[in-house]
Length: 180
Image (cartoon, rainbow, N blue to C red):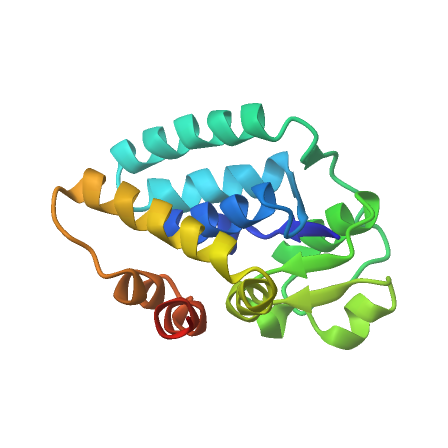
């Protein structure tokens, strides 16, 4: 399954890391455009110059790790979405033959419009919970890796359920900490 990742799921870090680690173990094939990556960098820049620099490095790293994920921007002519600033996302999804647009902005990507292009919209939490149900041990490993990275970065213990909840992945956090 080819999934175009909207900028809002690439930033924050924990969500992006969870999604891309799930992709590495076969959950989906990630896609993005240069403009989507630039939106991520600009969102980070709103916090600080340092965050923009970190985003720039992270973008270079994911481009290197996923050399076939970046697709050319599609032609937006004739496309409509409630927020015209999101039309490039739909155009890129169409151009990249994406099956899904993964976003947190559900109202900006109406199901009716996307389905007319053969695309569905998914939020990361429900998608990752479904994948975790089918691959619990692999996703628990992903969660442990993310937890360890967060602890190493902060220098203090982190509760994975709280970490995922803060990153708008509450159902995944609950599933991974309550399922055997």
